[in-house]
Length: 226
Length: 226
DNA sequence: GCGATGCTTCGGCTACGGTCGAAGCATGAA
DNA sequence: TTCATGCTTCGACCGTAGCCGAAGCATCGC
Image (cartoon, rainbow over all chains, first blue to last red; front, top):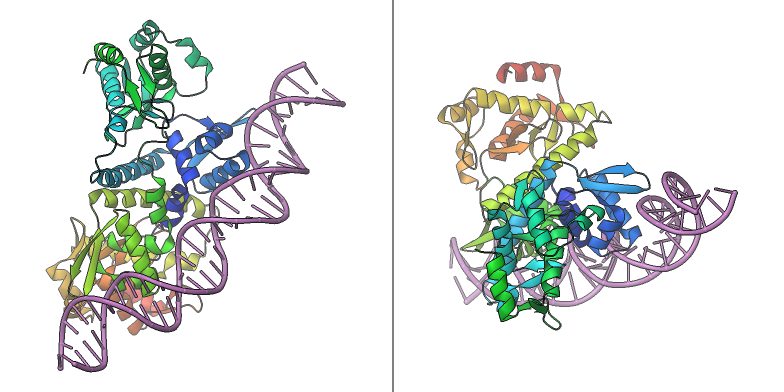
């Protein structure tokens, strides 16, 4: 079995935390620049450059030169499928790990994931948006529908700003506590920001937990019916 | 995206060559002992022990104690699916990598893969055995049929010895140069051993290439028609 | 009981690979 | 042209993780 397609070098590519973060960010299907990926991975530009060169050499990502930017995306469907299956295994392992200790319930209910809402509330919002067809699944990710844009605008969000930002508008992010999806991307971030603006919730000190006010919770339930 | 199931530790487990070899060996679906896996990975017992402990901790493999042996197998279908998808990506990358430089043609034709025949000859033998229904696909691997056993016996192989050995009799091994399967496992090893015994081929010095004699090649073609 | 076998733990060595700062190329803007 | 931005290359540092030999536990066979 020394022959066969040896998975070690491929797996090793995804095995580094910095590269794994980059790949996870690219799972949205969007093409991101080297700088964006560096920020996503939490490393400096030189380090990111080295990582991206390796991912490229390993056939995991494809690059598109455009002006002085370099956009990176996953090489093909196969790579995306592989990452997906890794997430499945990781989620299962993580799930089992979470089983013994009933983790902080506040974190399970609502927490901040990078810059958007995760946990039970995050999953509920995601499901609600999908049920209302404000958000639809597309090849390679999620898309905001016309009615979805109107909904966000009515919610007090500057939808036009999404166009300006290079960041993907909608991104489904797998929730480690629920093993379901919640909304990431620019829209996910904007929704959380708006909720904080309206004082529906506040961030707990020194924690990623988000605490809803009674009033905020009621309004959330009305806005995002199960 | 800091949340989500983080794939890095999982991928890192499969990213080490020794562990990758172990996992690949377990892909047959069989349960193997620590010693067997150590040999498969080409490391000493202590090293293998450490690797297996890590794989276990990561939820990739399950262990079954039986007497003074410890049998290891893949934890679940999800892990197998993940490894499968990795092999797909690896094969694709390997294929592309092989494209530019026409690699050593002798290696492409016939080479030793661990202890069995790989390359064009290996694939041809595999296809021929399948076409004759000496070998059939089953859930989780290949099986030698009754007529297949008779065929091997007529070829001069001690089929009864397969039972004694704990090693899986038939195993399909993906060929990196052909991107097709060839036969591994005890039967694959026995077939190659018998061919060497009959002087159909010899191993090239300091290489994994196998050189067929003109006579051996003719007999091979007759024995394993395309 | 006693040795043999299978596996694990321990200690120490080594090397590979990730990391960064500084400098070097490109490309686009002024 | 000249400057600014985006990215890469270079050089050096450091930590982690793989590796083995020897010794230590278990379990089995006699």
